[in-house]
Image (cartoon, rainbow, N blue to C red; front, side, top):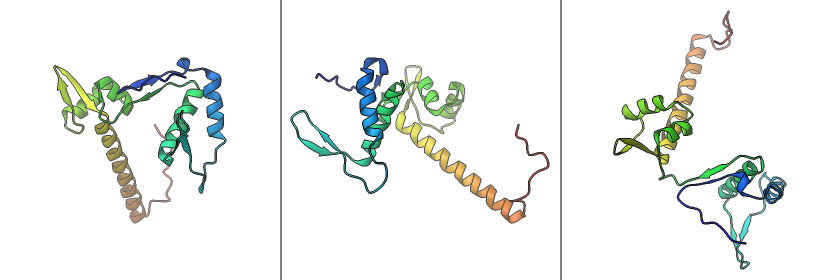
Length: 162
């Protein structure tokens, strides 16, 4: 069996693999126990050496194989990878103009290569994490305020959204 080296960024499409192999591995991983305590997973090298796989790495492998078995491609890249504004916008699930506004306002750091902006994946993840914290705080503040006002359990007359 030959292996293809993984580069700084690699997209693996399901069509580049034999479906029966991926499905067999996906079934094997799906049948493995998820709860704690669980047996320690190991990776075995071609020469028979075994090495323990950390739980987070095992879960990532399980996600990758399951996604491939479902026919979804997977992209693996290091956090120091630089993305184009379109790739960054796709990662954050927003439009490119919205992302550019965030970049220009200084909310997300970026560099310029010529006249093109580049954004580190790590900076996008940090922005995403910060936004999640802000949302949780805002929701907690709104809940606290509604409880203080006595309106927490009050249903508005028009409860339809949008």
